[in-house]
Length: 404
Image (cartoon, rainbow, N blue to C red; front, side):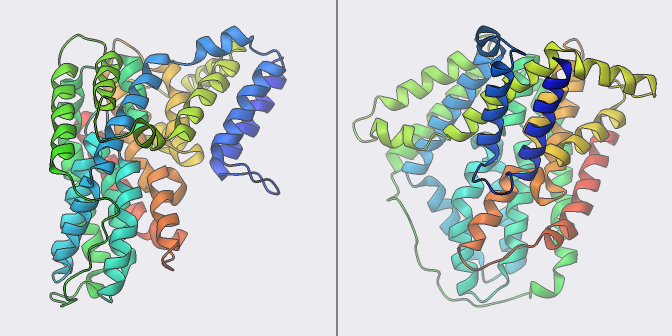
């Protein structure tokens, strides 16, 4: 049984890391789902154990935040912000700073994947019209959204998972992460300026960018969304269960005279939710046969200690770039000490910052790359790594110095 579980695990995580299986049209979600099915079919887990393995509070929180984010997309808020940024194209260096600041701030509260998905096409078209190279600005978008998302528990899926399972206090998490995030963001901007200094002339006159709003902007609907986010943060500071607070507020948004339920729920990323559920089951399968425990025991005998910030940072960063950051965090969850909240914070920062290293480290990177390709803009692996490697090294060193 142990060998069967190991084979299922290795095939599943290899497929998730590669993003597909040659000759098949499977994506990461499909591969993870097949891995979960295989764990049950091979009787590594019973059906009941598989369902019990899914962390329902985390799934509820993720689902609720997706509904809240859908409110902002349908209200035209995201598009209004992105179009507003393009008005700074006359000053490329200021435009670069504005993109990074805006994407980092919004990603901290409305998840980085959504920000990259909405911003990429608008920025791409406007930058091409201005006859500038879109690549540095798009890489900056992905990098900044990853860094900014590390600031709060609700900034990205891996933070949500760590915050929920570890029961980390919202304010404690943000206080611990804020300095590394701000320093890393400043460092990332400096790296981008240095690498692309010749492609960012001090002045360029692109003319007035054309409006490309995919949805009419509604002040009322945007204000409603902002109020819900504000109330949500206040509730997160109480002892009420986060998932119940979030799902209740999402339910209030569904009670709308203008926003159709089908439209809001149609923007929920069901693929990501399925990926989460499937990976919970796969991890429960290998945990049932003690494989992760034996591996970590072996590493501990070699001197690895999760109490040491640089050990944990290095391990989280390595795993994140082998299998992407969400699966990496699921691997680490079983070994983090609930009585040591700093371990959970370090894991969140390291896994998120490590997503900037190479293209497969973060879903946000892939969203930007795929979105840019539709406009004929190619962001190559090496081009991304040229910026991603120094930015990631600087960010991880910030984590070690600040929290070590």
